[in-house]
Every structure is written in C-alpha cells, then in structure tokens.
Image 1 (cartoon, rainbow, N blue to C red):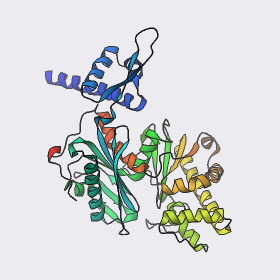
Image 2: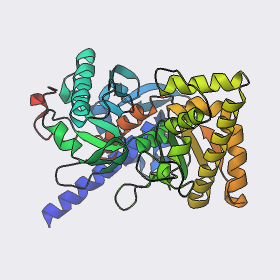
Image 3: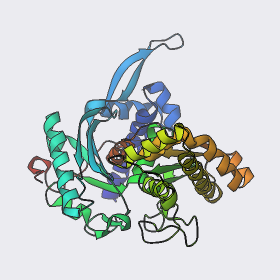
Image 4: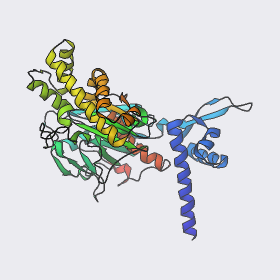
Length: 415
C-alpha cells in the first residue's frame, strides 16, 4: 500500500510539472499568479512546482510586470538553453539536419545531398548519422546534452514493432525498412521517427499558420503529396499510422500512373513531378537542373504569357482545389494550410483559383467554416517539425530527461 501511495504522489508531481511546463512553453512568459488559473493548480502547488523547475534549470525569470497595487510580478519562461534537440528531414533530394535550443533557434545545421542516388537505405542512414555528428561538432555539444532526435521520412511509419520504427515507403522503394534499428547500431541518442507530412503539420500547428486551430489539415506538396490531419488538437494517426496519405486518394479513375504504382492518384496531378510531366506532355520544355528550378521556370513562362504554361497552372489549381474539397467534406477542418516547397512556390499564384475550385467542389456549409492558407515556416518546416517530436516527450514528462538506451556518455555517432 505504501509503495502504491508513493507512486501516486510521484505521478501527481509529474503531472503538475508537465502542466506548468507545457503552459509556460506555449503561452509564456507568465507570472506565478497567472499560472494558477491557467492550469487549475493551487497557488501553493504552483509555487512548489515552479521552485522545482527553477532549481532544475528548466524555468527562468525574464523580467516583471506591474500588478494591481502590489509588488511587480516576476515573469517566467522555459529556459531556451535548458535542452537541445535535433530535427532531421529525409527529403526528396537531400537530408537536412538542424540542431535547436528549446526556443527553436537553430544553433547549427547540415545539408547532405542524396546526389542523384535516390533513397538507398544505407546511404540515407549514413547521411543521417553524418549530419548528427556534424551539428554536434559544430555546436560543441556532447550527445548527452540532446533531449532527442526527431526524423521525418517519406512513407508510413509503424512504430509499434519490437525493434522500433519501421518505414513503409512505397514511392521510394522502402518495404518495411527497420530505420530505427539501423540507426541504433551507431547512435544511442533517443530517436523519434514519423512521416514527414506529419512533422510539417506539427511545426505549423505549434508555430505557424495552423497555430490555435483544433481541427486542421496541413498539406505538404513537394514531388510527392501528403497531409497531417489534426483532430481535436492532435495529429490523427489511424489504425496503423497511415492516416494522411492524401496524395494517394484517387482523383481520376484509370488516370495517370502514380509513383506508388496505382492510377489516378492526386499526387500524379499536383505533385511537382506530376505537374512537370503534364507540362512536358503539353509541349513544354523545362530545362531546370532540378524539380524546384523547373517549377520556377513554369511559373516564369506563364508570367510571360505562354498559353500552355498558363493552362497547366490553371488545371493544377482546379485539381488541387478538388483535392482540398475532399478534405473539407471528409474532415470538416477549420483551417487548411498548404506547405511543402512546391506548395510554397506555387501557392502565391494558385491560391485564389484553388479557393474558387475548392468552393465549387466542396459542400457549402463545411466549406464556409474553412480557411485555406499558405504555410508560414518556409521550406525547412519538416526539420523544425521533426524536432518537436522529442520536445513533446520532454513536456509530457515534466522535463524528465529521456533514459538513454546506453549511457549517453558512451554514445557514438560513427557513420
């Protein structure tokens, strides 16, 4: 009985720490007096828990604010330097690694090109490990100072297996790749692996255009297409974490061949590769060295009055609007955010036409409750979102460091 009571007290203490830490992280700076009503904790509990968090170096004072006739109230925030985290974006042409403090100021970064070799598993693993070693070396930080590493990857991530996250990346040729186990051969850092569109969604809902929305869809348009569905404030995963594969919903039965092998997928029409293929088939001649420069060339050509380029962009806007209408009808979001490098490149020109097409294809009542916006965090949002994965665990546990698989002092990062 006594041991059970001790566990209950310990759990309550951790819950209180988590509540205060999370509120300070997202809403701070705040005073102790503001934290009580905001979290539902008594003034005594707030005082005790804040004292612990300050003593642990997780919370710090950042000035004061005037009170109603009394002494100025000290403002508190989560100390940015009290933890560091790493985000990794396994993208279409590169692996991007960023090291951040808890305020998401980037301390160091590394861009490692895939060099035209596609997503060869051994190469991707090597580049991730090389990037981790590079950012730690540049920041002069030991592995033990890192709260964790978040990794955004293309494909479906099944994290329920005994050996950690397994990636099913049909469009890049990954069939049940045990990515976490492969990385753990060479690093003892805590790893959190998720789909890249979902990490983008976390970034935009935490810091960007999705902030404050309880029900939203954050769409990623690159060469491929994906989405993060946020339901009641949380990313919706589905039965096996594959929810959000919006790019592989069927736009046209028997239509264009998609990278996944099926026909008529939305991705085959509005993903960057699909848009450029349609332009070529219509007589266009993109000469850009990569998809991003070729897509910019399409926009420039349309701006110059080329009718074929204009028609391709108009058609893309209608396809995209129809796909967004499906999201409106299925999920009734209050906000849809268009991100990803191709979405941000095409969005400023296409967004008015996309909204018009979405309104034409969606049911009127749910569409009237939805706004369609561009993402605000730029092309590196997947990296930022990946880094939120270890922060989520850090906040949920009240700032308790993640246990290392092997003591952090012996961690190695040899590619």
